Amino acid sequence: MAVYKEAYMTPIGERLIRELIERKKEEKKRERLVTVAGWITTAMFALLLFLLFSMAESSFGASMMQFFLSPYGFVLVAICAAASAFLIIEKKKSDEAEKEYTELRNEVVDRYEEIWNTEQLREYSYPLFEWLEREHDVNLYHR
Image (tube, rainbow, N blue to C red):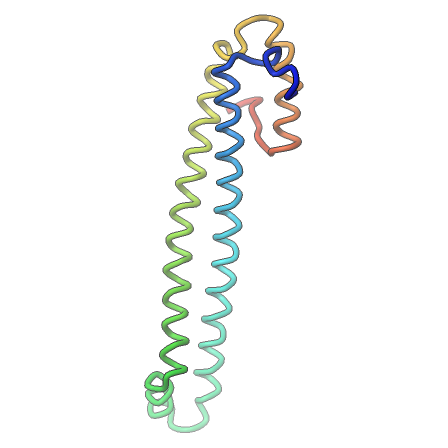
């Protein structure tokens, strides 16, 4: 495709496809970050709960107060809060990246006639669509 790219689409179409691939990569990257942040947040809260329940043998209120006043307890709570904040921020960024990708993808699908404006270009569009779906997980067959 790279050698004869003029035969596959117009220059505007090429720019749109390149941008679409970049946005898909960004969306996947954000999804991975959300997954990792979710697992880290879950692990930190599980550790916090484990430590709190393991201290329940003695008077619960005094040991809980002692736990939160200790430097380790404070650090663990701070890490849990930071991990939660990171998860929320990354989820918002992931949603925004998904929205941008979907908008551009819908634009490319809607502008099919403009991007592949001749019969010859339309013949090449389907192998291009197959390549995009296979290599980059970009589906341009329908909205």
